[in-house]
Amino acid sequence: MPNSVSLSRLRLAPAVALTVATALVCATLPPQAALAQTETTAVTAPNTPPQTLAKAHQLDWILTNHILPGFDRLAQSSATLAEVAASHCTPDDPALRDAFARAFDAWISVSHLRFGPTETDNRAFALAFWPDSRNKIPGTLRRALTEATRDSLTDADSFASQSVALRGFYALEYLLFDAAIQSEGTADQRCALVAAISADIARTTAAIRDDWHNSYAVTLVTPGPGNRYQSEAEIRQELFKTLTTGFQVLVDMRLGRPLGQFDAPRPKRAEARRSARSQHHIVLSLTAMEPLALALAAGDPALVQDIHAGFAKALKRASALDDPSLAGVADPARRFRIEAVQQDINDLRSLITTRLGPKLGVTAGFNSLDGD
Image (tube, rainbow, N blue to C red):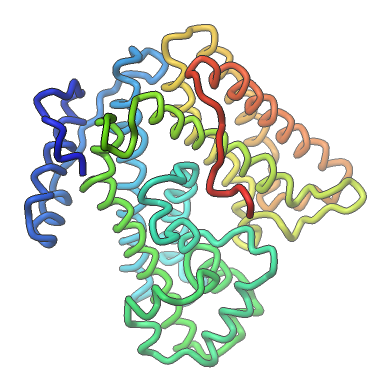
Protein backbone atom coordinates (compact mmCIF):
# COMPACT_ATOMS: atom_id res chain seq x y z
CA MET A 1 0.00 0.00 0.00
CA PRO A 2 1.55 3.32 -1.05
CA ASN A 3 0.88 5.13 2.25
CA SER A 4 3.15 8.00 1.24
CA VAL A 5 0.72 9.02 -1.52
CA SER A 6 -1.71 11.78 -0.62
CA LEU A 7 -5.15 11.05 -2.01
CA SER A 8 -5.76 14.77 -2.58
CA ARG A 9 -2.81 14.87 -4.99
CA LEU A 10 -4.24 12.16 -7.25
CA ARG A 11 -6.12 13.20 -10.36
CA LEU A 12 -8.60 10.36 -10.61
CA ALA A 13 -12.02 9.77 -12.07
CA PRO A 14 -14.66 9.78 -9.30
CA ALA A 15 -15.15 6.00 -9.43
CA VAL A 16 -11.42 5.38 -9.10
CA ALA A 17 -11.12 7.92 -6.30
CA LEU A 18 -13.88 6.04 -4.47
CA THR A 19 -12.03 2.76 -4.87
CA VAL A 20 -8.71 4.25 -3.77
CA ALA A 21 -10.26 6.02 -0.80
CA THR A 22 -11.95 2.81 0.32
CA ALA A 23 -8.69 0.88 0.03
CA LEU A 24 -6.80 3.47 2.06
CA VAL A 25 -9.47 3.45 4.78
CA CYS A 26 -9.54 -0.35 4.81
CA ALA A 27 -5.81 -0.46 5.46
CA THR A 28 -6.53 0.92 8.94
CA LEU A 29 -9.37 -1.48 9.75
CA PRO A 30 -9.32 -5.01 11.20
CA PRO A 31 -9.44 -7.66 8.44
CA GLN A 32 -13.14 -8.51 8.84
CA ALA A 33 -14.18 -4.87 8.97
CA ALA A 34 -12.06 -4.10 5.94
CA LEU A 35 -13.67 -6.93 3.99
CA ALA A 36 -17.14 -5.75 4.91
CA GLN A 37 -16.27 -2.22 3.86
CA THR A 38 -15.00 -3.19 0.43
CA GLU A 39 -17.78 -5.66 -0.28
CA THR A 40 -20.39 -2.92 0.10
CA THR A 41 -18.51 -0.47 -2.10
CA ALA A 42 -19.80 -0.37 -5.69
CA VAL A 43 -17.59 0.93 -8.46
CA THR A 44 -19.61 3.08 -10.83
CA ALA A 45 -17.88 3.16 -14.19
CA PRO A 46 -18.47 5.91 -16.75
CA ASN A 47 -20.01 4.90 -20.08
CA THR A 48 -17.33 6.56 -22.19
CA PRO A 49 -16.34 4.31 -25.11
CA PRO A 50 -12.69 3.31 -24.64
CA GLN A 51 -11.59 4.60 -28.04
CA THR A 52 -12.70 8.15 -27.16
CA LEU A 53 -10.64 8.42 -23.99
CA ALA A 54 -8.07 11.09 -23.36
CA LYS A 55 -4.69 9.66 -22.42
CA ALA A 56 -5.00 11.03 -18.89
CA HIS A 57 -8.13 8.89 -18.36
CA GLN A 58 -6.96 5.61 -19.90
CA LEU A 59 -5.79 3.92 -16.72
CA ASP A 60 -8.84 5.07 -14.76
CA TRP A 61 -11.15 3.63 -17.43
CA ILE A 62 -9.30 0.33 -17.67
CA LEU A 63 -9.45 -0.12 -13.91
CA THR A 64 -13.09 0.85 -13.39
CA ASN A 65 -14.61 -0.52 -16.62
CA HIS A 66 -12.47 -3.53 -17.42
CA ILE A 67 -10.56 -4.94 -14.47
CA LEU A 68 -12.68 -4.41 -11.35
CA PRO A 69 -16.07 -5.28 -12.91
CA GLY A 70 -14.56 -8.37 -14.50
CA PHE A 71 -13.25 -9.74 -11.22
CA ASP A 72 -16.45 -8.73 -9.43
CA ARG A 73 -18.45 -10.81 -11.92
CA LEU A 74 -16.04 -13.71 -11.53
CA ALA A 75 -16.31 -13.72 -7.74
CA GLN A 76 -20.09 -13.37 -7.79
CA SER A 77 -20.68 -16.10 -10.36
CA SER A 78 -18.23 -18.40 -8.56
CA ALA A 79 -20.05 -17.83 -5.26
CA THR A 80 -23.27 -18.81 -7.02
CA LEU A 81 -21.57 -21.92 -8.41
CA ALA A 82 -20.47 -22.96 -4.91
CA GLU A 83 -23.97 -22.37 -3.55
CA VAL A 84 -25.59 -24.40 -6.32
CA ALA A 85 -23.03 -27.22 -6.10
CA ALA A 86 -23.72 -27.64 -2.40
CA SER A 87 -27.22 -28.91 -3.18
CA HIS A 88 -27.19 -29.79 -6.91
CA CYS A 89 -24.18 -32.03 -7.39
CA THR A 90 -25.22 -34.58 -10.01
CA PRO A 91 -23.29 -34.02 -13.25
CA ASP A 92 -26.29 -33.52 -15.53
CA ASP A 93 -28.19 -31.20 -13.18
CA PRO A 94 -29.21 -28.17 -15.31
CA ALA A 95 -28.75 -25.73 -12.43
CA LEU A 96 -25.22 -26.96 -11.76
CA ARG A 97 -24.21 -26.91 -15.41
CA ASP A 98 -25.63 -23.42 -15.87
CA ALA A 99 -23.77 -22.12 -12.82
CA PHE A 100 -20.59 -23.78 -14.04
CA ALA A 101 -20.96 -22.20 -17.49
CA ARG A 102 -21.53 -18.71 -16.06
CA ALA A 103 -18.57 -18.88 -13.71
CA PHE A 104 -16.32 -20.36 -16.41
CA ASP A 105 -17.38 -17.58 -18.79
CA ALA A 106 -16.44 -15.00 -16.19
CA TRP A 107 -13.01 -16.56 -15.72
CA ILE A 108 -12.24 -16.70 -19.44
CA SER A 109 -13.24 -13.04 -19.72
CA VAL A 110 -10.53 -11.99 -17.23
CA SER A 111 -8.01 -14.76 -17.82
CA HIS A 112 -5.77 -12.47 -19.89
CA LEU A 113 -5.20 -10.31 -16.79
CA ARG A 114 -2.39 -12.51 -15.56
CA PHE A 115 -0.72 -10.13 -13.13
CA GLY A 116 -1.11 -8.91 -9.57
CA PRO A 117 -3.71 -10.74 -7.46
CA THR A 118 -4.34 -13.37 -10.15
CA GLU A 119 -0.76 -14.58 -9.88
CA THR A 120 -0.52 -14.44 -6.07
CA ASP A 121 -0.21 -17.95 -4.59
CA ASN A 122 -0.57 -19.45 -8.09
CA ARG A 123 -4.27 -18.55 -8.08
CA ALA A 124 -4.54 -18.58 -11.88
CA PHE A 125 -3.23 -22.15 -12.02
CA ALA A 126 -5.53 -23.14 -9.15
CA LEU A 127 -8.47 -21.90 -11.23
CA ALA A 128 -7.26 -23.03 -14.62
CA PHE A 129 -4.73 -25.84 -14.83
CA TRP A 130 -4.58 -25.92 -18.60
CA PRO A 131 -3.02 -27.10 -20.79
CA ASP A 132 -2.67 -30.34 -18.88
CA SER A 133 0.08 -31.63 -21.14
CA ARG A 134 0.82 -34.65 -18.94
CA ASN A 135 -2.83 -35.57 -18.40
CA LYS A 136 -2.60 -35.15 -14.65
CA ILE A 137 -6.18 -34.11 -14.01
CA PRO A 138 -7.99 -37.44 -14.58
CA GLY A 139 -5.50 -39.44 -12.51
CA THR A 140 -5.61 -36.93 -9.68
CA LEU A 141 -9.41 -36.97 -9.72
CA ARG A 142 -9.50 -40.77 -9.64
CA ARG A 143 -7.24 -40.86 -6.61
CA ALA A 144 -9.32 -38.26 -4.85
CA LEU A 145 -12.52 -40.16 -5.57
CA THR A 146 -11.14 -43.37 -4.14
CA GLU A 147 -8.70 -42.20 -1.45
CA ALA A 148 -9.58 -38.71 -0.24
CA THR A 149 -11.10 -38.33 3.21
CA ARG A 150 -14.13 -36.13 3.74
CA ASP A 151 -12.07 -33.83 5.96
CA SER A 152 -9.57 -33.24 3.16
CA LEU A 153 -12.44 -32.18 0.89
CA THR A 154 -14.44 -30.06 3.31
CA ASP A 155 -11.58 -28.27 5.06
CA ALA A 156 -10.71 -25.14 3.06
CA ASP A 157 -7.03 -24.99 3.99
CA SER A 158 -6.56 -28.70 3.36
CA PHE A 159 -8.18 -28.52 -0.06
CA ALA A 160 -6.22 -25.41 -1.02
CA SER A 161 -3.01 -27.37 -0.42
CA GLN A 162 -4.00 -30.04 -2.94
CA SER A 163 -2.45 -30.31 -6.40
CA VAL A 164 -3.70 -27.73 -8.88
CA ALA A 165 -4.73 -30.71 -11.01
CA LEU A 166 -7.52 -31.33 -8.47
CA ARG A 167 -8.69 -27.73 -8.38
CA GLY A 168 -10.39 -25.28 -10.69
CA PHE A 169 -12.65 -25.24 -13.71
CA TYR A 170 -10.95 -27.95 -15.76
CA ALA A 171 -11.09 -30.51 -12.95
CA LEU A 172 -14.75 -29.65 -12.43
CA GLU A 173 -15.37 -30.01 -16.16
CA TYR A 174 -14.16 -33.63 -15.98
CA LEU A 175 -16.58 -34.36 -13.13
CA LEU A 176 -19.51 -32.84 -15.01
CA PHE A 177 -18.83 -34.01 -18.56
CA ASP A 178 -16.42 -36.99 -18.65
CA ALA A 179 -18.15 -40.38 -18.55
CA ALA A 180 -15.05 -42.26 -17.38
CA ILE A 181 -14.55 -40.00 -14.36
CA GLN A 182 -18.27 -40.15 -13.59
CA SER A 183 -17.90 -43.92 -13.13
CA GLU A 184 -15.18 -43.55 -10.47
CA GLY A 185 -15.98 -43.70 -6.77
CA THR A 186 -19.49 -43.45 -5.37
CA ALA A 187 -22.16 -40.86 -6.06
CA ASP A 188 -21.58 -39.40 -2.58
CA GLN A 189 -17.83 -39.12 -3.22
CA ARG A 190 -18.39 -37.43 -6.56
CA CYS A 191 -20.88 -35.02 -4.99
CA ALA A 192 -18.44 -34.16 -2.23
CA LEU A 193 -15.69 -33.46 -4.76
CA VAL A 194 -17.94 -31.32 -6.96
CA ALA A 195 -18.88 -29.25 -3.92
CA ALA A 196 -15.27 -29.02 -2.72
CA ILE A 197 -13.89 -27.83 -6.07
CA SER A 198 -16.71 -25.32 -6.47
CA ALA A 199 -16.19 -23.93 -2.97
CA ASP A 200 -12.46 -23.67 -3.61
CA ILE A 201 -13.09 -21.76 -6.86
CA ALA A 202 -15.34 -19.36 -4.94
CA ARG A 203 -12.71 -18.76 -2.25
CA THR A 204 -9.95 -18.22 -4.80
CA THR A 205 -11.92 -15.79 -6.93
CA ALA A 206 -13.09 -13.89 -3.85
CA ALA A 207 -9.46 -13.53 -2.77
CA ILE A 208 -8.53 -12.11 -6.18
CA ARG A 209 -11.44 -9.66 -6.09
CA ASP A 210 -10.67 -8.56 -2.54
CA ASP A 211 -6.99 -8.02 -3.30
CA TRP A 212 -7.91 -5.84 -6.25
CA HIS A 213 -10.33 -3.73 -4.26
CA ASN A 214 -8.34 -3.61 -1.01
CA SER A 215 -4.90 -2.83 -2.37
CA TYR A 216 -3.96 -3.52 -5.98
CA ALA A 217 -6.36 -0.98 -7.49
CA VAL A 218 -4.35 1.69 -5.69
CA THR A 219 -1.10 0.50 -7.22
CA LEU A 220 -2.53 0.82 -10.71
CA VAL A 221 -3.31 4.52 -10.32
CA THR A 222 -0.53 5.69 -7.99
CA PRO A 223 2.82 5.16 -9.69
CA GLY A 224 5.86 6.76 -8.12
CA PRO A 225 9.04 6.21 -6.12
CA GLY A 226 8.67 3.41 -3.61
CA ASN A 227 5.49 2.05 -5.18
CA ARG A 228 5.02 -1.10 -7.22
CA TYR A 229 5.09 0.86 -10.48
CA GLN A 230 7.48 3.76 -10.83
CA SER A 231 5.61 5.48 -13.66
CA GLU A 232 2.49 5.32 -15.80
CA ALA A 233 4.71 3.93 -18.55
CA GLU A 234 5.37 0.86 -16.37
CA ILE A 235 1.66 0.40 -15.82
CA ARG A 236 1.00 0.62 -19.55
CA GLN A 237 3.78 -1.92 -20.06
CA GLU A 238 1.96 -4.27 -17.69
CA LEU A 239 -1.36 -3.81 -19.44
CA PHE A 240 0.19 -4.18 -22.89
CA LYS A 241 1.77 -7.42 -21.72
CA THR A 242 -1.65 -8.74 -20.75
CA LEU A 243 -2.79 -8.21 -24.33
CA THR A 244 0.19 -9.97 -25.86
CA THR A 245 -0.22 -12.82 -23.37
CA GLY A 246 -3.88 -13.12 -24.34
CA PHE A 247 -2.97 -13.35 -28.02
CA GLN A 248 -0.29 -15.93 -27.23
CA VAL A 249 -2.87 -18.11 -25.48
CA LEU A 250 -5.32 -17.76 -28.37
CA VAL A 251 -2.89 -18.44 -31.21
CA ASP A 252 -0.53 -20.97 -29.69
CA MET A 253 -2.76 -22.76 -27.21
CA ARG A 254 -6.48 -22.42 -27.84
CA LEU A 255 -5.96 -22.85 -31.59
CA GLY A 256 -2.41 -24.12 -32.02
CA ARG A 257 -2.70 -27.13 -29.72
CA PRO A 258 -5.71 -28.77 -31.41
CA LEU A 259 -4.54 -27.79 -34.90
CA GLY A 260 -1.18 -29.51 -34.45
CA GLN A 261 0.16 -30.29 -37.92
CA PHE A 262 -1.91 -30.88 -41.05
CA ASP A 263 -0.99 -34.56 -41.08
CA ALA A 264 -1.17 -34.84 -37.28
CA PRO A 265 -4.12 -32.83 -35.91
CA ARG A 266 -4.77 -33.04 -32.17
CA PRO A 267 -8.53 -32.54 -31.63
CA LYS A 268 -8.35 -34.01 -28.12
CA ARG A 269 -6.07 -31.15 -27.10
CA ALA A 270 -8.79 -28.55 -27.60
CA GLU A 271 -9.54 -26.55 -24.49
CA ALA A 272 -12.72 -27.55 -22.64
CA ARG A 273 -13.77 -29.88 -25.45
CA ARG A 274 -15.71 -32.16 -23.06
CA SER A 275 -18.15 -29.35 -22.34
CA ALA A 276 -18.03 -28.19 -26.00
CA ARG A 277 -16.70 -24.77 -25.00
CA SER A 278 -13.57 -24.61 -27.20
CA GLN A 279 -14.96 -22.25 -29.83
CA HIS A 280 -16.85 -20.27 -27.19
CA HIS A 281 -13.64 -19.53 -25.31
CA ILE A 282 -12.04 -18.06 -28.42
CA VAL A 283 -15.00 -15.73 -28.92
CA LEU A 284 -15.12 -14.79 -25.23
CA SER A 285 -11.40 -14.01 -25.14
CA LEU A 286 -11.51 -11.79 -28.20
CA THR A 287 -14.58 -9.99 -26.90
CA ALA A 288 -12.95 -9.37 -23.52
CA MET A 289 -9.62 -8.17 -24.90
CA GLU A 290 -10.95 -5.66 -27.42
CA PRO A 291 -11.95 -2.92 -24.92
CA LEU A 292 -8.49 -3.07 -23.32
CA ALA A 293 -6.79 -2.75 -26.70
CA LEU A 294 -9.04 0.16 -27.72
CA ALA A 295 -8.48 1.96 -24.42
CA LEU A 296 -4.71 1.71 -24.81
CA ALA A 297 -4.93 2.92 -28.42
CA ALA A 298 -7.16 5.91 -27.57
CA GLY A 299 -5.89 9.15 -29.05
CA ASP A 300 -4.83 7.55 -32.34
CA PRO A 301 -8.01 7.35 -34.47
CA ALA A 302 -6.37 5.41 -37.32
CA LEU A 303 -4.97 2.81 -34.96
CA VAL A 304 -8.25 2.55 -33.08
CA GLN A 305 -10.09 1.96 -36.37
CA ASP A 306 -7.62 -0.72 -37.47
CA ILE A 307 -7.73 -2.50 -34.12
CA HIS A 308 -11.52 -2.48 -34.08
CA ALA A 309 -11.62 -3.79 -37.66
CA GLY A 310 -9.13 -6.53 -36.76
CA PHE A 311 -11.18 -7.70 -33.79
CA ALA A 312 -14.40 -7.53 -35.81
CA LYS A 313 -12.92 -9.70 -38.54
CA ALA A 314 -11.55 -12.30 -36.13
CA LEU A 315 -14.75 -12.36 -34.06
CA LYS A 316 -16.96 -12.76 -37.12
CA ARG A 317 -14.95 -15.70 -38.41
CA ALA A 318 -14.59 -17.33 -34.97
CA SER A 319 -18.31 -16.98 -34.24
CA ALA A 320 -19.20 -18.58 -37.60
CA LEU A 321 -17.15 -21.75 -37.11
CA ASP A 322 -20.10 -23.84 -35.87
CA ASP A 323 -17.56 -26.17 -34.29
CA PRO A 324 -18.00 -26.05 -30.48
CA SER A 325 -15.19 -28.49 -29.63
CA LEU A 326 -12.96 -27.70 -32.65
CA ALA A 327 -13.28 -31.29 -33.84
CA GLY A 328 -13.00 -29.90 -37.36
CA VAL A 329 -9.21 -29.67 -37.06
CA ALA A 330 -9.15 -33.33 -38.15
CA ASP A 331 -11.35 -32.72 -41.20
CA PRO A 332 -9.46 -31.10 -44.11
CA ALA A 333 -12.67 -29.53 -45.40
CA ARG A 334 -13.30 -27.76 -42.07
CA ARG A 335 -9.75 -27.31 -40.87
CA PHE A 336 -9.00 -24.37 -43.18
CA ARG A 337 -11.75 -22.32 -41.48
CA ILE A 338 -10.07 -22.82 -38.10
CA GLU A 339 -6.68 -21.97 -39.62
CA ALA A 340 -8.23 -18.79 -41.02
CA VAL A 341 -9.33 -17.77 -37.52
CA GLN A 342 -5.82 -18.38 -36.26
CA GLN A 343 -4.41 -16.24 -39.07
CA ASP A 344 -6.86 -13.41 -38.34
CA ILE A 345 -5.80 -13.40 -34.70
CA ASN A 346 -2.14 -13.59 -35.68
CA ASP A 347 -2.63 -10.56 -37.92
CA LEU A 348 -4.28 -8.74 -35.04
CA ARG A 349 -1.46 -9.69 -32.70
CA SER A 350 1.03 -8.32 -35.23
CA LEU A 351 -0.91 -5.06 -35.42
CA ILE A 352 -0.90 -4.74 -31.64
CA THR A 353 2.81 -5.54 -31.40
CA THR A 354 4.06 -3.38 -34.25
CA ARG A 355 1.83 -0.33 -33.87
CA LEU A 356 0.28 -0.20 -30.40
CA GLY A 357 3.49 -1.17 -28.60
CA PRO A 358 5.59 1.62 -30.16
CA LYS A 359 2.77 4.13 -29.59
CA LEU A 360 2.87 3.29 -25.89
CA GLY A 361 6.65 3.15 -25.85
CA VAL A 362 6.61 -0.42 -24.53
CA THR A 363 7.46 -3.97 -25.59
CA ALA A 364 5.71 -7.24 -24.88
CA GLY A 365 8.21 -8.36 -22.22
CA PHE A 366 8.05 -11.63 -20.32
CA ASN A 367 4.80 -13.09 -19.06
CA SER A 368 3.63 -15.80 -16.73
CA LEU A 369 3.53 -18.33 -19.60
CA ASP A 370 7.17 -17.92 -20.61
CA GLY A 371 9.29 -20.92 -19.79
CA ASP A 372 6.32 -23.29 -19.34
